Structures are given as C-alpha cells and as structure tokens.
Length: 329
Ligand SMILES: Cc1ncc(C[n+]2csc(CCOP(=O)(O)OP(=O)(O)O)c2C)c(N)n1
Ligand SMILES: [Mg+2]
Image 1 (cartoon, rainbow, N blue to C red):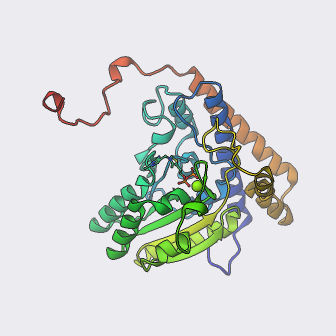
Image 2: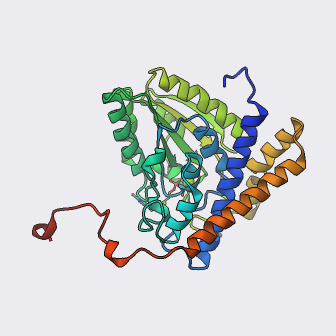
Image 3: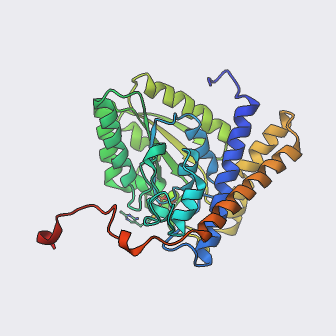
C-alpha cells in the first residue's frame, strides 16, 4: 500500500477482525487472572490493538517480531494461535510453550514470534541479535521490535539503536507510548526532547503516528518496512496510545485521572475503524457479526484451555536451559 492508495475494504475488514480478536482475548485474559485461573501476571493490551495490527499487517510469515510484557496483541497479530496462547496463560499442556512460560514468556518460533519479555526492554536486544543474524545469513526477512515508553530511559534501548544503525540492520523499532511506565507518568521521569529524538540522535529515520488510528499505523508501517526491505537500515515508529486498564489486570489504575481515561476511551481504535467502514458502505450488522464470531472463537479457546490437563511433573525440567549441571550447583 502506498500513501496515494487507500487500503481496500477487505484489508480494513481483516484488520478490524484482528483488533476485535486481540481485544476479546485480553478481556478474557484479565478475567482469567482475576478468577485465579491464570497464574503470574497478565498485562492487557486493550486500547492499543491498532498498533500490533497495523504493523503486523505489513509483515510476512517469515519475518520476526520481539515483544515485551504487554505482548498478547503482538503474538496474535503475528499469527500465533489463540488456543495455544490461552492454554499457555492457564499453564496447561498444549500451551505454545508447553504451559510452562505463561503470559510474559509467550513465544512461537513457527510464527516468527521470538518472545514476550519481562525485562524492560530486553526484547529489543533480542531483536537486534535476530536482525544481525538475518543480515549475516543474507535472509529475505525483517525484524520488528515492540516496546513501551518505559524503555525510553533504559540503556539496552540505546545500545540496540546504536548497533542497528551502525550495522544497518533490517529492524523496525516500534515504541508504543501509552504515557505510563507501570504507575509512573513517563514524561515526569524523561529528560530531553522525548521518545522520537532518542532515535533521531542515532540518525535513524522516524515516523510518529496516532497509534489509535489503524489506517495511520498501517500506512506508516508500510512506508518504513518497504524502506527496510530495500536495504535502508533500521527505522523507528513512534505510536501514541493508551491502555484502558491498569498496568496489570488486577491494578485498578487509581493513579490516573478518570477524565483522562474517559477521553482516551472515546478515541477507541475499534469504534473508529467501524465508523470508517460504515462510511465505506459496510453494514453495521456485518461488523456486529464479526464481533460475535470472534467472541465465540475466544470463548472456545479459553474453554479448551480450562479443559486441558496441567503438564506432567516429569516434564518440569525439559525445555530448561542447561547451565552447567552439578558442578555449577
Ligand atoms: C529492567 C526492569 N526494571 C523494572 C521492571 C518493572 N517493570 C515492569 S513493567 C514496567 C513499566 C513498563 O512501562 P512501559 O515500557 O511503558 O510498558 P507498558 O506497561 O506501559 O506497556 C516496569 C518498570 C522490569 N520489568 N524490568
Ligand atoms: Mg508505557
């Protein structure tokens, strides 16, 4: 897609379905944590769906992504099966990581999803390594690294930007700025001119988009990924957005002004694209049917997860990195 060509209705309908799928998955992920079915932590992506959707719409199955703690949306948009993800959240067999990783460790190499990551912002370090490998092996693929605004004040991001630019790696950085790093307003702890300047200081090309506008994200991602595929080196997409819920599913987000939350909910990425589609002549009933079909599919995913057995205890030490055996212990 170029600037001049508006996306086809079919493409936008697909992105709409994807955003609805991500939202429904994470609404139910939050309920699973609240009810004790999911263990550990769950960071919901509700409100931010347009970014993962618009970026991944420009990635091939063979491309790689790396993510962070709020990673369910990126995984689904990259093609990871929601059934395997629901099983993973609930710690069951058939989970994408055998039920042993949970929400923050979802990875599925078969879909190019290199992993969520609980360490801020180590997904970008992983992505640089993957992009370096892609370049050394002369492979025809690119890498996309999603991270939050909390990464803007962490050293590994600067190392990653520097390395990617020095070696002109095929890497798209995507900063999802939802204004908060856990309970802290990021702007209050960020020196300098902000998140875009961070990348510009490494001479990396940047674009800024309204991250709640999936068409804007799609168009910017199309331009930047085309540039990267042409050998133009790394690029950086800065997308502004907002998470509807607390940092974790059980955080009520009381540190946020309710008026601020309300104003961002009014900018809902799904409602916006539905209005656009209706303007294109799509029937309201067709959009409602998509939402219902998505709900049924996600209900079935969590139902399958609840029905699946926990992993056998004899598998507790499989898939675990060998760090040296008894001598190390
Ligand atoms: C190295 C490191 N320090 C601190 C934390 C604790 N922590 C978890 S999430 C988070 C804030 C992240 O904010 P951001 O990157 O903006 O992502 P968001 O939660 O807003 O999506 C922090 C500080 C961590 N996970 N890793
Ligand atoms: Mg944030």
